[in-house]
Length: 253
Length: 232
Image 1: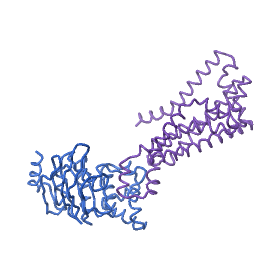
Image 2 (image 1 turned 45 degrees about the vertical axis):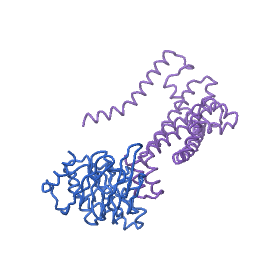
Image 3 (image 1 turned 90 degrees about the vertical axis):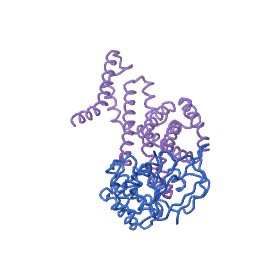
Image 4 (image 1 turned 180 degrees about the horizontal axis):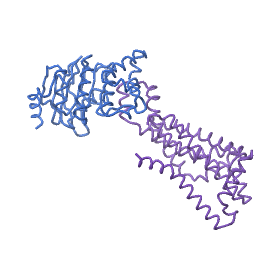
C-alpha cells in the first residue's frame, strides 16, 4: 500500500523533475555564455513573459493564434472523420484516398507553408497549412480506430438485429472515442505549432508568430523565448483540456 | 418448428467440413452437439445464425435468434442494464415493457444488484450471466450456445448451468448447445448428438428423459462412460 502510494507520488514528481533539470541546464548554459542576446537566463525570460502578459497586444495575439489554430483543427477534424467513416464503409474510397494521404504526409511542411503564402492571404494561409498538416494524422487515426473495432461486438449486433442508429450511438462512436481522443491530443499541439510557424512566415496580423518574428528581427532573444514559453503553456493547456473532455466522455474505463 | 439440416455442405478452401449432412433439431428442446475441438461444431451455429455462407438447406430457422457466446461479448461502454437494452430497442418498443423484461432476466440470473455496473467491473461468471440474461430477454424462439462454460471453474460452471436451466424452464425455447464437455451436455440437454470425423458424421445420439433440475452427474455414470468411449 505504502509502496504503491510512493510510486504514485514519484510518478507525479517525474515531470516536475524533468522541468527542473531542463531549467538548471538552461541556467548553467546561459551563465556560461553570459550574452543575453544569444541565451538569456530562465528568470529573465519569465520576467519578459510576465511583462508581455500585462499588455493587451499579447492577449490579442494569443487569441488570434488560438482562434486560427482551433478553427483549422475543427475543419480538419470534421473532414478526417467524415472521410474515415466513408473509407471504412466503402473500401474503394479508402484505396483512392490512401495515396493522397501518403503524399499529404510526405510533402515538406515548409513547401506547403510557402505555397499557401503565395496562394492565400496572411490570415487564411496558417489555417490551411495547419489543417493540411494535421489532416493525414487525424484521418489515419480515425480510420485505424474504426478498423480496430471489436468484430465480435459487430457480429453480436448483427445477430440481434440492432438498428443502425442504435449501433452508431451506443457502439461505433463510443468504441472509437478512446483512440480518437489519443489522436486529437497528439495532433492539437502540433496544429498550434504549425499555425505559429506559418504565422511567422506569413506575417499574420494579431498573431504569436508575427510577434516572434519581430523579436527575432530586433534580436530580442528574451522576448522570443518568452513567446516560445507562452506557446508551450497554451499547447499544454489544450492537451489538458482534451484530457479533461476525454475523462468526462469516456467514463467506462 | 423443427430446424432441419438437409444436405448441408460447408468447405474451407479444399477442406470439406460438412458433406451432405442431415440433422433435425426438435423445437422447444435443448440439443447438444458434442464433439472435439475443431470438429465443426461452431460452423453449424454460424450457418444457422447467418454469420457464414453454406451450400444445401437449413429449414425452420426463425427470424430472431439469441446467441450465448464463448466470450461474453458485452459492450464495454454500456452498463449491465444498457447492454441488455441494446439488443431490445427494435424488438420491444415500449420502455416499461423493456424494463420489465430486463429486470426479470437479471433477477433470474441473480444480477439485479449489478444493474449499473460496467463490464469491466464484472467477474467472468457475472459477465456470462449477463450474456445469458440478454439471450433470454431477447424474444427469440431459438437460442444458440457456443461453449459458454468453457474455461470456467466447476463451481461457477454449475451455478451458471443452474441459472440457465432456471431461465430455460420458464419458456422452453429451442436451444442448440455446442460443447466438447460431456458433463455439460449431460446436465443440460434432452438430446446429445456426438459428431466427429471429416467430413463430419453423426457418431452417436443419446436422449435423456430426466428433467434438468433433478439431474446429478453421479447418477449418470453409465451415459458418461458410453460417451467417453466414443472419444477414446
